[in-house]
Amino acid sequence: MARKPNNSAQTRKLLSAMLRQPRAWQYGYEISKQTGLKSGTLYPLLIRLSDQGLLESQWQEPERPGKPPRHAYKLTSNGLAFAREMAALDTASTFRRKLAGATT
Amino acid sequence: MTARASLVRRFASALIAHAANVLPPMRSPWGEAMKHELDHIEDDVEALRWAAGCVIASYLERGGRKMNQSFGTIVRKPSAFLPLAMSLTALALLGGAYLFALATGQAGLERQQDEGSIAHLWQLLMAGQLPVLIFFAIKWLPRAPRQTLYVLALQACAALAAMAPVYFLNL
Image (tube, rainbow over all chains, first blue to last red; front, side, top):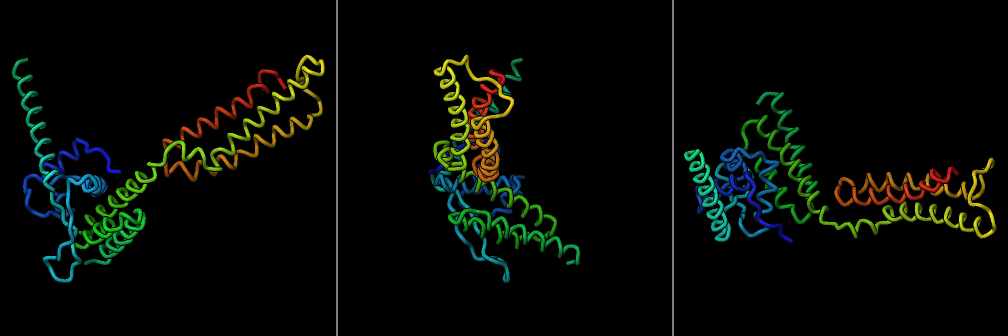
């Protein structure tokens, strides 16, 4: 059974990185560099998002010869909607924080 | 690539192979993904960090899968219910002996100079469950920590219940 989508800081970070290039296939190591998430955090997140149908994956031929194929990831349409929802929530909470800071 | 770097890279490869092995079979494509990604990391130390993280990820994933086992499933394992049954039998022995003593006109159970067969049986039951308990903890704690702790707590309660009459009746 797929676990519930969560909105932990790490998940938000991952989704926001994937949202920057929603149509592009991205590799694990590159995502890790972009988000600062270590592989120990990144892979459980990728696995869970994939189980929930928010992320699709495929094997891609390497750009350089002699290297093995790479597993690449992209948000599905549901994943895209969820990532946008999370981004909107983040924007709203940042706005609220700024507003509270300005009024105090 | 220096000899030291090569050693680091070899260690990273060994770690990532372990990470892939640890994953449940249904997750094997993820293990392959981790392994292949390592070959695209140029820096050896960075590769080692990546591999170490993958080991953690694999254990988390394996633990998560096994954590799906419910309390009911685990408590039905022989190594879980056997200590419970032994404690309850020990308690029942004391209860039976107490009732028998009352029925035969004695004031109750009394401490005897030479321990009787009931005392020996009680000791055997209590001591005999220890290895089973240790086996259960070693086997199940890494697989389903929370549920195993609940079962261990239950076993501890049963053992305390079996020991309580000995303490309170000063047997």
